[in-house]
Length: 519
Image (cartoon, rainbow, N blue to C red):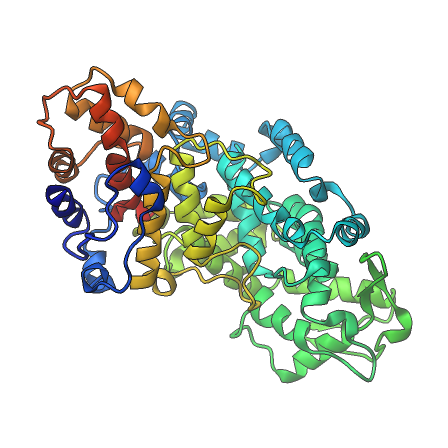
C-alpha cells in the first residue's frame, strides 16, 4: 500500500500526500473519504497545483474543441468530429434539431413527467403528494441526464450558460415549478436563437418575475430589483453607461408585468406607469401599447454594442479563458451586431478565432468535473435518479454546485479563482474515488474494461484506459506512475483478478489527474 500512496502523491506533483484517500479496493473506493483534519491531505496552494496544468503545445485541435464545447469528451465524440471535420461538426452542433434527441426526451418525460406539465398541474400534484424532494430534484435530474447523454452537447452547454446568466434559483415549490417551465419555454427554445427573443422571454417568465419581484412593481410603488439586474447583469453590464435614473425609468416602464393564478405571464394595465421615459438612447413612443413599449425597449437593449460586448465576454470566459482578449471579444460582438443578436454566429466567431485554438487551460467548475467524468466512463444515468441515486446526488452537493440553487442573481462563478482551493480539490478527489468504484450505482465502462484488457501487456492496459477516459495517449510520467501504482512491469500481462483489483486505482488516476480538472 505504501508504494501506491507514494505513486498517487507523485500524481499530484507533491502538492498533496494522499494517505487518507487512496482507494485500496473497490469497497474502499466506494466509501473512502479524505480526512480533512490530517495535515498530510491539505494542498499547499493553487500555485503549486497550477504547475500540473496541461500544456497548449501539441494540443489536438479537434479534441480541444470537443472538450470546450461539450460537457466532456468521449471516444465517440472525438471520432465523430475527426470523421466530419471540425467545421461540419460545429454546424451540426449549432443546429440541435438535426440531432436525434427525441428518444432521450421521451424517456425523460416518462421518468419525470413534471418536465412537460404546466405549472398549475405541477403544483397541484405537489400539493396532493407533498413530495417536495421530487419537485426539487425534477429539473436537476433531467439536467444531469441531458448533460451526460444528449448528442446536442453545445445546445445543452448554452442552456446552462443562459441559466447562469439569467439565474433564477429554486427556493420553494412555486419557484421550482416556475423554473421547470422557464427551462422548457425559455432557455431550451432560445439557447441558440436571438438574444433579443431570449431577453423578452426571460423578462416575462414567472420564475424571473417571482425571483426579482417585478410582479410586485406598480405605478407609485415601483420595485427596482429586476430593472437593476436587467441592466447590470443581463444586458449592458455595470460599465454600460447607465445611471440610477435609468434604473428607475426602466422599473417604471416595466410596471404591470405580472402573472396570473396559474403562474402564466400577464400584463396588468392598471398597475402600469404610463409616464414618458428615455433610457440609453431609447424614447418611449407615442404609439403602441404599454406592453409593446416594454418589449421594444428590451429589444433595444439586446442590440446595443455594450450588450453585445458584455455578453460576448461572458461567453468567452465560459468557453475560452478566464480573461479573454479584446480581440476575440470584439470579433464575437461584431458577429452579434451583424446578425441581430443571433447566438450561432457569435459562437462560430469565437471558435474560428485564433484565441480559441490557443486558449489556456480552463479550470472546470465542479459540475463540469463530475459530468465530464461520467461521460468519459460512458455512465448510464437513470433519468429518475433523483429520489433514489443518493450517492450521485451527494457528490453534487459535496462539490458545491447544485444546479438551480445559487442564491445570487449573477449565477455560479466561472473562474479558477472561485473554485481552485483546498476544499474544492479535496471534494473532487473524494468524488473521483467514488466514481472509480465499478460498483457505483450507474452502469459504466469500468465494469467492462478488465475483460477488454484481458491478455494485454500492462502498457496496452494503461493505454486502453487512457483512450477511454482521456481520448489521448499516455504521457511518459503517467505511464511510469501507473507502473509504480500497480507494481506491474510494463511488459507484464496481468491476470483477470489483478485487472479487477487494479481498475479503481487506474481509473482514479485519470479522473483525478490535474489535467482532468481542466478543459
